[in-house]
Length: 235
Ligand code: CA
Image 1 (cartoon, rainbow, N blue to C red):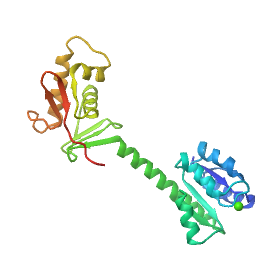
Image 2 (image 1 turned 120 degrees about the vertical axis):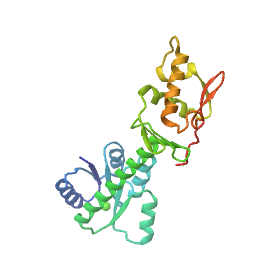
Image 3 (image 1 turned 60 degrees about the horizontal axis):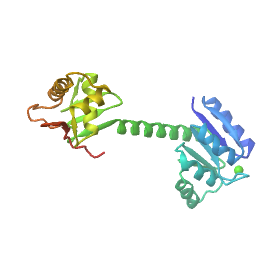
Image 4 (image 1 turned 135 degrees about the horizontal axis):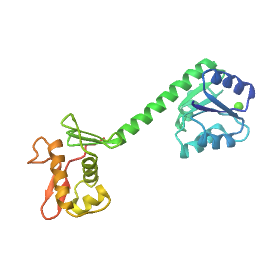
């Protein structure tokens, strides 16, 4: 259940908004104080409805202070209707603007739209940060999903192979010794680890390289170990 905070000193307006929010299945809370609103906006709310004219501090100031540390969506309520005020409000980081007197039904639509946009943005952020791609998308590693795609095909790596590829790609350009790789993958070393590493690398190459004898991604550094040579794509 999404939590909506109403910061509005006119109780009548706050009551009406709250009735509509309840009916839409939101959890609503109300405060008439901008100062109290800031702390509740930061700790509690999924979206804030913010009146501009408040008794203690200006709504603009509430918006500014919330935005210092949070990207919680904010919809401003205002009686000021000029284009300039509107731009100023949005410049402070408000996500939308509703001019009084407003229809509560329209406010509900705006709330849903802003929440949807915020959720979409978060999902996109998560998806973007979760995967890295190399050499123009030939190799794509999605850490969150533990997925690897090579040449457009999904590749099945064992958990150890996945960890090894991740360790190498995170240290792209650096030659890692077999001992370092074992440490990164297993967290400890053991007898005969050299051959274990070599076997894993061989398997990974067969899975991600079209021509494993001329690898595009994992290079053998003689006398040292292995180096990831894939070129990261720009996001
Ligand atoms: Ca007011």
